[in-house]
Length: 179
Image 1: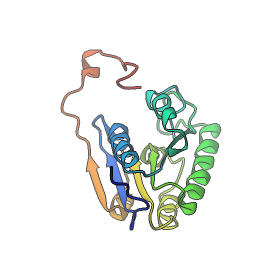
Image 2: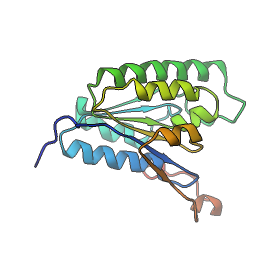
Image 3: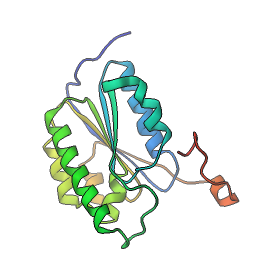
Image 4: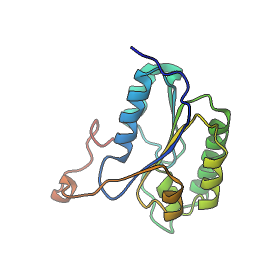
């Protein structure tokens, strides 16, 4: 096995779109990074339920840390409450600290694009966050609705497109596959 150490230059990646697989793609990247000896931090902005990734990453110890800051459940546009806003603010403060310190090589800001869409965080805040990160830190922003300003600041943008989804045939989210 060839270990990487620190990355020479961290870049910004975005996984967005209406299709399934944004968080899953970020987790795949995390698994690759772990295999090369990099440390990973995933900050889940809106998730607060018992997700499968939360349990599976515990075996990596401090090499892969997931922190959930959401209340769980769904939020509708214009319906976010004060506690949602407070948790998003706390998540941004944590993200700022993690990115600035540079202890982790890959930082995944899961569902931050949706937090932007719900106006729980602002585009200028996120842009400032990206600019203030340690130079070797790779950052992945996931979630639908990535704003154009964030897309322009990124080095790589992947859009997941929904072609067919079993949800529309009545299949509910299944533990181990969707959660």
